[in-house]
Length: 153
Image 1 (cartoon, rainbow, N blue to C red):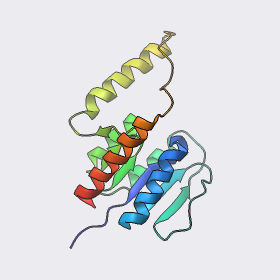
Image 2: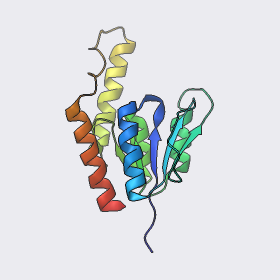
Image 3: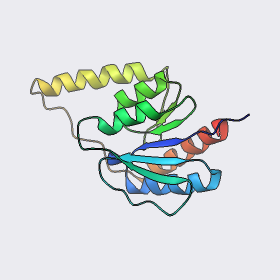
């Protein structure tokens, strides 16, 4: 029996253009897509797509995803600690820029994130945020999503 994977989206910070790619993919492969956010996010009318609104608060959406995710599921997030937690549970994780987080690359990323956070907390000025999502990022994301769904879906 083949297990059905669910695609979970850390939707509070997920760009609309990435959500639209996910909507099309969920319909195409007929897999559940669940957006988790602390506000209502409009989703297309589809038996495959839903939105779960969680209360406001630090990491509430992340904690919900970690509690619900199953082995083989896919989580879309740019949150490194969330990616690390779902990978520990046997799920996959891809950033909205198409970076696939794996057991092999998540620890160094977590270490770097913590280091940068420590620098910022000490008052250091550490670069700006990420650049705007470009066409290359959208293509990289769509390709990473297709690869994961082909392999696990």
